[in-house]
Amino acid sequence: MNQAPAPLSTWARNVSPSPTLAVDAKAKALQAAGEDVCGFAAGEPDFDTPEHIKEACIAALKAGKTKYAPTPGIEPLRQALADKYLADYGLKYAPSQFVVSPGGKFSCYLTILALCSPGDEVIIPAPFWVSYPEMVKLAGATPKLVLADDTTGFKLTPAQLEAAITPKSRLLIINSPSNPTGAVYTKPELEALVDVALRHNLYIMSDEIYEHLTYDGAKHFSPATFSKEAEARTVIVSGFAKTYSMTGWRLGTLVAPAPIAKACAELQSQMSSNATTFAQFGAVAALKEKEKTQASLTMMLAAFDRRRKFLHGELNKIPGVSCLLAQGAFYLFPNISKFGLKDLDFCNRLLEQQKVAAVPGSAFGAEGYLRLSYATSDEIIAKGVARLAAFCATLPRG
Image (cartoon, rainbow, N blue to C red):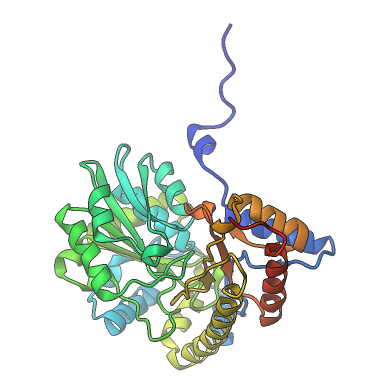
């Protein structure tokens, strides 16, 4: 008797749903049911897109910019991106080396698909953004996870990288500033990792989506700036979601050596054609109307910095909780391992008993932590951390 075929493909059965989106959806469902939920799960700014960006998009719509765009993006946007990377980092890319995609997530996926084949290994420092390993698996490659916990400031060391490399290693993923920890690599720290990667002929995918969200004088550095050799082995992925509060616009970017950029554009042409045409005109305004954009960013950074410091201080007042002060993005990643609970159990009970939504560290490859986003109101942060303290007070500590 013949067996019925599996209802889903190997890819569909092997991929895991996004735990961050799942927690956020659960919190929103409780809110819709009338519950007073303090949500720390969302990875998006709680500010609206700046008006001048929205106005540029509306003008493009009214002007009939509603047809297909060139697969790698409209020319004015790719030129504006080339101008940005030259001004910000001294990197001289041609507009043709940029690909505009339907979101930073898609830029990551295009990069992995362009560089990795079945059997290749991709080195991913943990804690990691939840989608990296799943994208690697979808490409038929193997994620190799290397834990860098709070004892190293959540930063991969050169010795750890060296130990993880095998003859199958193809790609190193670096995310600075980091989601979920907010860690920012210094220039010497990043240079040391790049030296190891280049010595072993690895490519580097540098996820720089949080590049402008840094605090306490911390500065973002791109691996591509260190040498011509590093530039030739680096793909920079980014987008407009975090800096410009454009998460729902779905506009990502990547810039790469010409053959890799061409491959990414060809892959995109068969999967999504192009990023939304009229939305790209809003992105042009974000890059070209610099004074207006900077004013919005300055306001947002001031709010994030205030919340970051408050939340950090309150977390470290809770017996059994310890938390490093992040220097980037809009997350803190407190250690809750002293309570002896699996972090998923901790989060489920926290949501059920105190109506506080947080994402377990295990979702990011680091058991014993929570990811708390401070991209939410001061009121919710104050109320939520008080509820977290009350919850922790009910738990035994090891």
